[in-house]
Length: 225
Image (tube, rainbow, N blue to C red; front, side, top):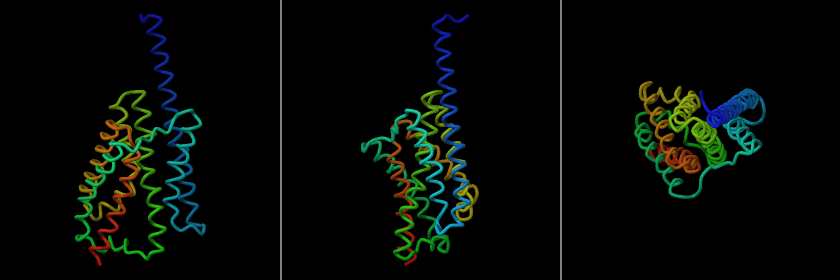
């Protein structure tokens, strides 16, 4: 029979586990509801690029509001070595994507935009892709990690990453084959999760994810003339 101190410790752990589970579930469900409402509703308004705004509002603004309202700190990381490592990791992911440009020029021709199109595309891409890193790492991985351990945090993050990239898989499979898409998305999810375990810096990944998209667009425009 456990002693009073052990029983008290187990009770605290169980309470902490319930709080974490409720917090992550609330971020996921409330964020998902806002995302769906906006993703469906925005196309019927003057805003044409509604998907990026829906992702940002649903999985960044809503979780951030819940994060702050529950007394948690943002803990995004600093401009340190971990920040640079996050950017560097995404630069490694850029390499296989660059190899796809000459194989599928028609697909990448979408990056050939007028200046006004770039002005709209760049910030919308920023808020969309950085949201994925914020939600999967800070909201899911860190919260689960600090309650149930690093391995569970990594697994939860990988599940969230996989769910967040269903749409990306649909178009990526057409240019990289289904197996290639699964390998790429699986590798990126695992490697970003492992790096986060070491640095706890999501700012670098948010910046790196956006930089990857910018450099891919620039490379496509240069190659396609």
